[in-house]
Amino acid sequence: MKIVLGADHAGYPLKERVKAHLTEQGREVLDLGTYSTESVDYPDYAAAVGKAVVANPGDLGILICGTGIGISIAANKIKGVRAALCTDYAMAKLAREHNDANILALGGRTTAEAAALDIVDAFLRTAFAGGRHQMRLDKIRNLEAE
Image (spheres, rainbow, N blue to C red):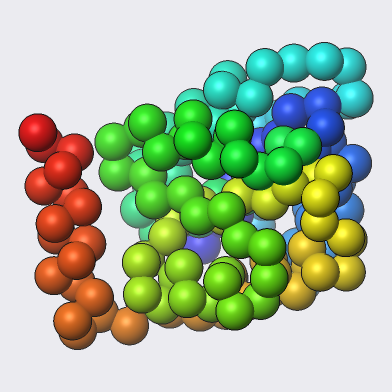
């Protein structure tokens, strides 16, 4: 599984720390930018990561902007993306387990580094539970077709 990263300028510092954390774990990482704190538009990175994750269903994405809100909204406009803004370990675990989220969104200005790394680990360690949750995912997919 490849982890596809993207961030705007506000998320860049946390993205770099997350990237180092994932690399230390031996994970394969694809960094789609941004590569500095120079102002950029988060929808561009949300689209790049979202399209990469949808094209390779075994991969997961992590997106970071100032709050995680804008970048998650933008990512969820890509058909097949299930981006979840998570602010703690339990949310990240449940986003994967119940919703089969394929992109984690974080707030670079609102999430402490240690908490962010715990959230990332929970998200990546947790598998989709299936079962009764699959029916709900099917309903979400049907919404995309409307």
